[in-house]
Length: 74
View 1 (spheres, helix red, strand yellow):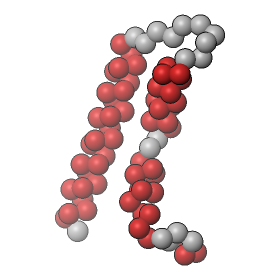
View 2: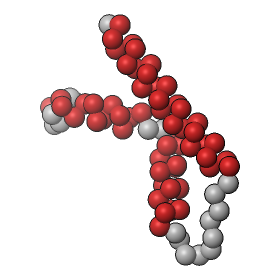
View 3: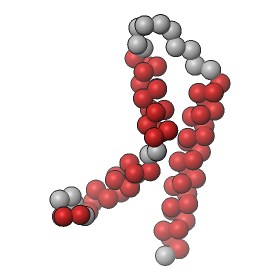
View 4: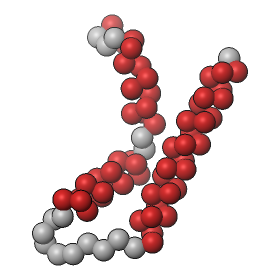
């Protein structure tokens, strides 16, 4: 890796973390907030949260499938 500070075995984990976009991070933070509860009011989940989750997961799955197919062709 750059400047030989990381072991090359960490590359798959870094590749996975690099795939996470800000929407994914927002979704994870939102679920943590919902699970812990902020105590200042009530948070109600509506259909949009489930749709957003489905879109994020579909995008991640399609990205991994695309990477898998392009890596096996080379």
